[in-house]
Image (cartoon, one colour):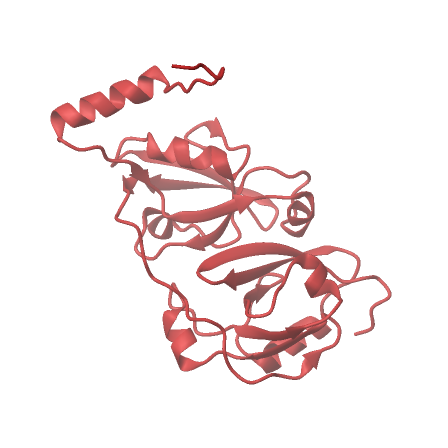
Length: 241
């Protein structure tokens, strides 16, 4: 019967909503947007063309989801949902979850540095998706010296398991000290897009890397296990092309 000074509270409007749903349906439903999001750091904000960090960056758009049908894109930063500010990634799920299913809401996003309003009809949260991306495999590619990574083509198995019908990407087979390592890239990561351009294969990735500007943060989309992650890649000003 001890008391440790801890207590937990549920907002009354949320509790009453649960009660009403149990009475009317016999079970509780939650609103679903269909995006996987992450926080926007200062470097990521710079890479997305934002003046300051904030909002929730879309790292994945689920197939056949309300977000996909509404025109959301990977890289969109959600800053407002149904008139309410989205300060960070943890702010978004409660706003979406408590929204009535079937309601159309306005969502403000920052896309390539410019604000855009998208109208989305909220769906019902489906069962958890157990889809897994296979472990990275394949032979070593040549070292991309400017970024400090060796990459290889994806296997057919890896390609078939990528979401949203993606047809390209490269897998990191070796990494050394350099911009990619500083950004957080690891062995086995699958690189999906670089500076707003979808990565198709090893040769195209090397061309993209050779043309990257220096001295500024650039967005890099990585898939690690089954989770896409945005990273901010910055090439030193004295780096040669």
